Each structure stands twice: as structure tokens, then as C-alpha cells.
Image 1 (spheres, helix red, strand yellow):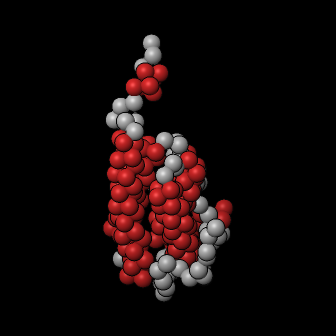
Image 2 (cartoon, rainbow, N blue to C red):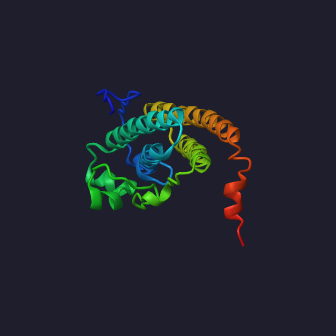
Image 3 (tube, one colour):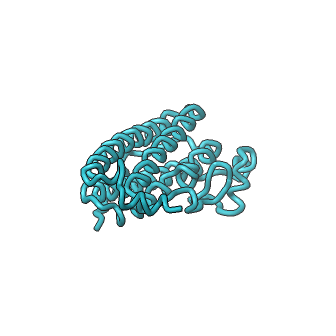
Length: 203
């Protein structure tokens, strides 16, 4: 059960609309390393995670990613509100506008619509945690790239906040991987499990 607090995790108050910025930032809404994929990844993986601590970690981070999705949606909305048709044409926002007007739609900066093939839920503790660690670094890199392209401090500050949260999530998943590895090694599973490996190596 989730408890929804009706305010953004970090305030978004953008004074100057900028459709060019919106076109790159929307990648963190529906792009290959964006917040939608992150929330679905963690909230899907949690069901098969065998340890309560890791199940809780995935639920907490997956829920937070939904809050980040909300922030990105607010940023894109504020960057595109009240645009004139001339501004839309000059900025190159017309390709998005023709399909979605200024509605928020999960799409990458490249224009590719969101697809669930951008994330994996394997049901294997170690595999899923490595997926999560890589995902957080890819999201951090995307935020780095956005910060290289965006000058407006009203946009940069919430983006910097989101980037910091990716680093914290990476650290939490690193702790989770160490916990899982210790537990699996106790059962002689992760390092080597003769009964299991024998079946895998059968000729």
C-alpha cells in the first residue's frame, strides 16, 4: 500500500518556458533509462526477491521513482505551457506537438515511444541487483548530459536533485548486493552449488 503526499519531492517552479529543453528532458520520463522504466523495474522485481530487506528496498526505491516521474512530468509541462505556434515551429517541438499537443507522453529524446523492453525482471537475486546498479548509473549519466545542455537554474536545480537520488539509489543497491551475496554464500549457492551446477553443466 502506498501513501501519496500531494507535493513534489523537490519544488519545480520554471519561469521561462523552453520547448528545446523539454525535448531532451522528456527522455527521463519515457526514455530508455528514465523514471517510468525504473519504477516498473523495481516494483516488478520486488515480488520474486527472496529477502524481506531487499523486497523493502525495491518497494521504497520503486515508489520514489514514481515521485521522480511526477517531477519530470511537471518540468516538461512547465517548459511547454502557453507556447505560441511560432515558438513550437521554431524550436522543433512541432513533431511532438502534432501527435501529443503539449500533453505529457512517455517518449525518449530521440522520439522513440516508451517500451518495456528497456528493463528486465529476471527473478534471480544477483542478476536483478546488477541490473539495478547499472540502471542507476545509466540514469545518472543521462542527468549529467541534461545538465551539460541546460543553463536555466530553475530547470537545473530539480535535475541536480534527481541526479543525486540516482547516486543514493546506486549506493543502496550496492549494499543490497553485498547483503544478498553474504546470504547466498552462507548456503554455498552463489559461489558454488554442486547440486545446481551439476544440472547446468550436464552434457
